[in-house]
Length: 296
Image (cartoon, rainbow, N blue to C red; front, side, top):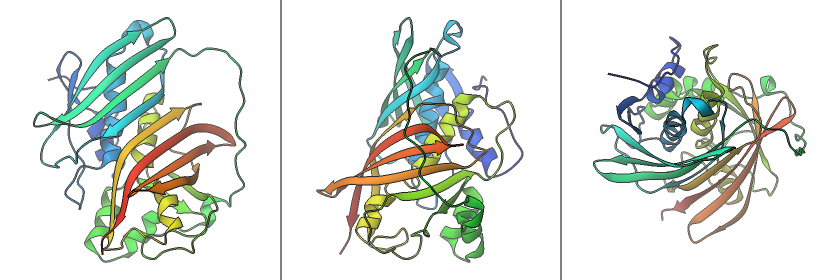
């Protein structure tokens, strides 16, 4: 049985995340991935998103080995079941002189749960500019989400503490258990892996881990504008679509700063935009639209 070449680590919870990316090769351009435990009983969207990144790249031939993923656009169509392996079928759309394009369908029991288009590019010279990184306090001075979850005696908190590979540190405080004052200011969140990535992890894996991470907080600016918080029993959230543009290399073992805004919400849907910075460089940009509702 053949698996995709993803390095291992003995450190949890990162080891479990990497295991989901070490997918089994079913046949040409088709892969099968396992699922991370979630107390919700549904597959975490960020996991499927990261697996899609890895599956798409696995079909790019060795002659194009220098091509890095620079963009992906995905539609989340159905919730996934934890007890059913996810199948990733990849279509080779284009291998041009500079770009390779892949279309990926993730499915369970013959039904598509995610559909995506990914693009890879040769490393090439060209014009360059970037958005300056906003001012933010040192992440080491801010409260840790990992420490918070570990301190709470509740099944949901214990699940987050044992399975979530990311430590998040909100500038101005999080909205885990109570709302924050309503504000139009950008939301600033520092985050990084709780365990360091293996030394031989590729840039592709670091970029896939960014996809895994971001689905945890992309809708926060929508929530904050309307006094919502994560543990509210009335809150109902779901990702509808998610796009990422990677501009520069990223190291998910080191701190990344997310600057998030929401330009619009309507009809039970909210749109969030995010810019990501590391070491003063603008490394990625994202957009996500999600279902954001409150039950009476």
